[in-house]
Length: 137
Image (cartoon, rainbow, N blue to C red; front, side, top):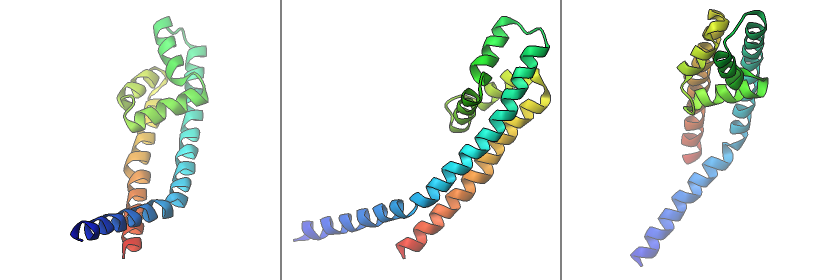
């Protein structure tokens, strides 16, 4: 009898957790759009800077290949920024690759990381925790 009671409690907690996840999907969708929008805006600027740098100066072939691998198109740049934000690639490495194009582009990478990690994701974490606490009451 005690095993059945414990099992029911476990399923109750599981049900509450599943409800919390389900109710946060709408907020998660908006977070996705915010992150994609920020990434796209920064990727446009960084890709343009990389393209201008490679076309206006005499860049070594090894450096050109590195810049092209990280900033060759908007999609590649968005992927590089996503990897830098999530730990797939060190953000300092990404900033060092774009640094020859100018300090402003290195600063843009740092600003992107700062905005995403310290503001957007922390605020969203607070919203999700607050929602979970309200749903759990």
